[in-house]
Length: 155
Image 1 (spheres, rainbow, N blue to C red):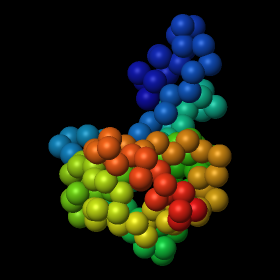
Image 2 (image 1 turned 180 degrees about the horizontal axis):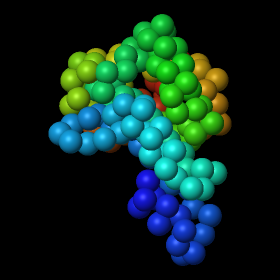
Image 3 (image 1 turned 120 degrees about the vertical axis):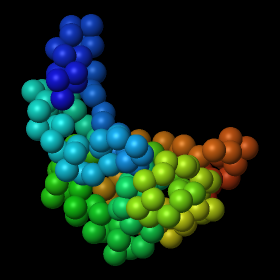
Image 4 (image 1 turned 90 degrees about the horizontal axis):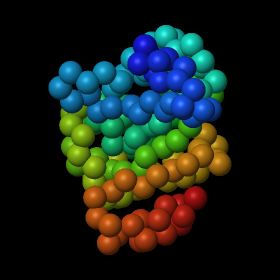
């Protein structure tokens, strides 16, 4: 939090918002539990200039199962309870090559990994993500147009 406070206090940053991305938990990384992110936010002085980005592969690898409707709702309720939905600013969309809880950050094309298209259907239909940046971060640029069409088809 100290580094974020220092950056936000610098006049050169203007009114920039610092967005913390949830991690998969590889090695000694922090940020793979919602509690880690909540502690970072608690130490930030200007909370109006901080937000959170959920990366679907990262949270799945960290143990948050978003592949089913009940799992997705449970994860979002946990996020709201622990961090606060008001801090949610963006989402990175990607499937996961490894199983839930693996703590391995390996992005996969949508519907070809362990999350599966059902998980993305819940995301696309959720009111949590209306008017929010959803950034496709899958490994095959040649498939991006098709993946965007696929996401729009399950909205």
